Amino acid sequence: MKTQQEFTSLKHIVVKILHTATPGVIVAGIVSLIAKHGFSLSPETLHRTDFFIYFFSLLLVFQFLLRLAFVGNKKKFLKDSRAESILVCCWALVLFFLRVGILPGEISPAITSSTYLIASQMLILLFSVIKVPYLYRMLASLRLSPPLTVVSAFLIIITIGTLLLVLPHSTVPGKDTSFIDALFTAASATCVTGLIVVDTGSHFSIFGQLVILVLVQIGGLGLMVFASLFALTWGDFGVRERLILRDIVRYENLSKIRYLVLFILAFTLIFEATGAILLYFQFLPLEKSSLQAAYSALFHSVSAFCNAGFSIYSDSFRGYQNNLPVNLIMTFLIIWGGLGFIVILNIMQTVFARMKGIKKSLSLHSKLVIITTLTLIGLGTLFLYTGEGKNLLKDLSLQGKILASFFQSVTARTAGFNTIHIGSLTTFTSFFLIILMFIGASPGSTGGGIKTSTFATLLLTIKSMIQGKDEVETLKRTIPRTIVYQTLCVAILAFGWISVATLFLSFTESSDFLTILFEVFSAFGTVGLSRGITANLTSWGKMIIIITVLVGRIGPLTLALAIAGKKVAKRYRYPEESIIIG
Image (tube, rainbow, N blue to C red; front, side):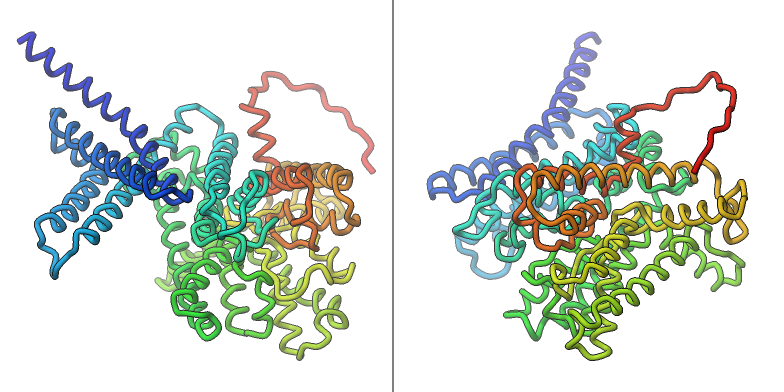
């Protein structure tokens, strides 16, 4: 009996050791993949790298089978590890087909070896994807506050992106990327900013561009949202993880947080796929091949929906200035990506409810966001048309002028694409774009800035104070004072950081003040427009912009809360005494 208990205890220890060792094997496998695809290796070294890829893939399968053999309740184990089970079965089927010869036709040994190598690489990659929720749980187990969790997640992604972009194979032959430039690009992509120190299309290889695209996608939606998707898929999503995600996506209904995550991912995929298909038919006549057109369409669709502003075209979209379909597709993606997923969900719920005959209206937040967004787009189009009518737009037709003004009005608040030369804008237009970049997109979206709802609340607060009201009221609703205080904090902290960044950038750079101010506001608003100084920034200037894009993407108030730590319970209250304001 004692021997049986000892054997059971030993099996439990073995399973625990194997489970703990799995992430280490995955990391070793990823390192092998990076060595193979990131560096120019000699044939001998490449052969050794392939051997390690085979070895680590077999080790992953072996440890899974050992855990299955030693575990007591095999049915429960397979249910809890269904992702790994499916992956190992698929890998085994590929290996079986290759070795036994079930696949049709004659297969040469070279093709067999190549296919097996691809299968081994895919096994390692997919195993690493499956383990993404462990990163989520690791951050959650540290008991960090939600703001600090967000900051940590962004820093992790930026670090990984930097290490990948600095690899030799991330750039085209004959060029290399310095560490500071790789860090700048990774931060700009992760924070969906679009400011670049090197040209994305001509400097980075396809591998490097795909790294940027993945960073844009993860940064636009948030690492925690991606981790949550896998955690939800495989049933590993606890209460604390839900609480953290609730604070990140600004959704109060904790019981339905999983549906929001699934909605975000589904909505994103649908919009990006639709945008890519529509753009493909527009790019096809002008690209070298259908494959290049498809790649360009996918890259720009993701970049537009995530409000990133990254483009593989050196002149952004100036070549499509008069192309009505491309302009409308891009602005459509940008607007919907910048509205915020909470607003989009609220719109869809309201529409479906009314289709069923149920009386339902939009929330106050959605109404403010939509009204502010439409107003800013309209005013932006008008001011751009007025400011550049006799300058950059003078040679265009009436339709061309309106289209260019509309496109730039939409992209200036957070996306960063351009169909006109930003460095040649008048002072009037440049300063107006600074205002749009400062406001930015909406909360819970892929964009930056102080957000449209913050700007609207700020105006409503000023209006209430002028009217002598003690409460901020709009659309037959009263905005809570806590929200008003948060609005003032966000605006003041944003102005404070922009002032500090502009001050230091004025010291490190030799450009004129408007150009520097434009650059800082563009970085803070995660826009990506520039008057031409980004590529010529000093190392100190690049670091200032890197920090600024991070502050702008995370939000100054969120960053302040992350630094401040946990709230302190107040057990007393001082007497009130008035002061004179104004």
